[in-house]
Length: 344
Image (cartoon, rainbow, N blue to C red; front, side, top):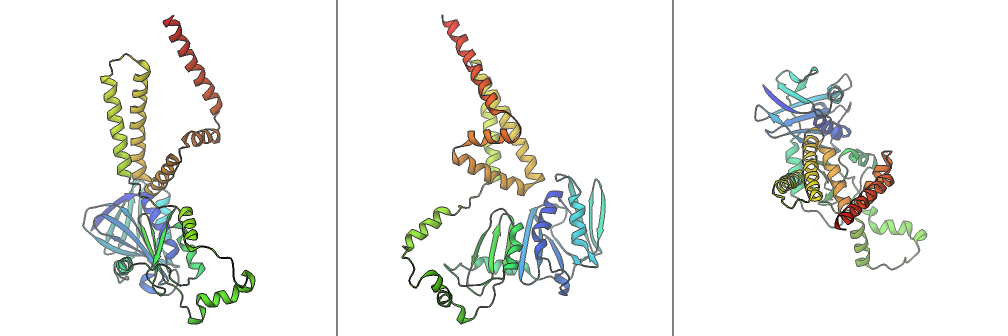
């Protein structure tokens, strides 16, 4: 028997991300559900209907090195929906413990218990499929085709995704934070090449269209594309702890008698410690939300317009930032007048 623990948010997030790829009522037997795979560090949720494959993972704590179970999504016993609804009824930070047994999967928490039938039977070797796709180098411009209804499945994969394809007849890889997926392309006949497309549209576009420098076009797209950056939670927590320690150390070493500087150091230390504690809690309760927020915050910091962002947020929250500004200016003027009076 193996017990694996994670938060309710982590469990619902994994199930939500792979749910569009579940083979429901497709008559595919063993793949008609969500495959849960714990490897000793991460719990993986895997779903496929042979057209697409999705794998979401979250860090979990287990009492045994590994286990695998598939919970059914069949119409008569939709354990996937039941588990997702049960986990979603919990506060995000609450711990859920999954017990994998030969007779099924048991989910427990401080609020109760849910027992679901599960299978230890055959499920596709998803690691082999992902490993093969990731080892292939992407082509510069694959000529390929996809069913649009399948593309809609990736909207829950993540706020930002990257894709690549090693060849026109190979699966496209969809990659996001703690998520990887595959989508098989459509078969394309030789007559459907780019030349045929131009022949079909040249009447609307003009027999010879305007000349556009290829390099200029590439630079345009490069400038418009969002560069994907890795924002590690560890770097933020480390910086906050450093700032907390530095600020509090400066409080005790400050010997100038400058009350303004003392207040500034105190404020920096307390605010950094508060931010660190909130970030640490959010990492446990809602890791996906944390990653998305860090991405947004980093872009705002790089824009150099923090004041404008803060002003707009204050107004949206129903505050009066202009009054805050006026009060602060009056406070600074009062301090200046007091200093001038003492100097006189």
